[in-house]
Length: 112
Image (tube, rainbow, N blue to C red; front, side, top):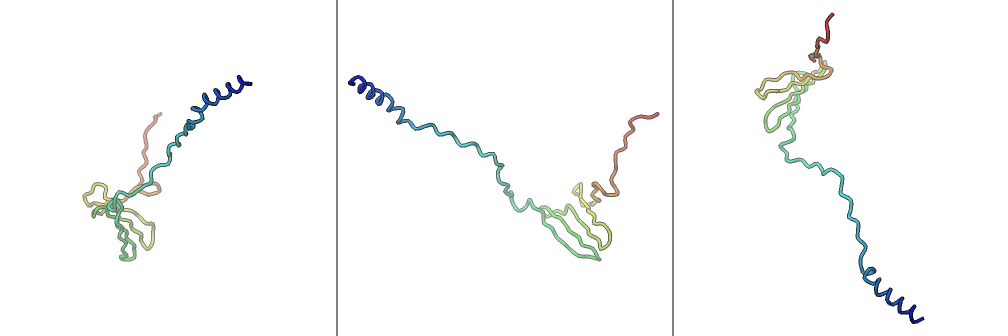
């Protein structure tokens, strides 16, 4: 009996440091969400001016005081967009899918 008592006391003292240790906390998983989008400043957003003239509505888009795009909504007909591509003040129609001025590439693949 004395041996059993001695064995249990020794076992308790030997296991005491293991009980005193805190279990390792697993680190939190990294946050995989993208950072919130914050506008850099107000100059990034264009200033839009809407005017009515001669039966049509004109929207002028300016960035840092420079006019770069004009949308025109005529009273009758389809709206169209004029864009200053070179920054020299000359506006050309913006071409895109569905516009009549769209130039489709036509390559010669083979001849017979």
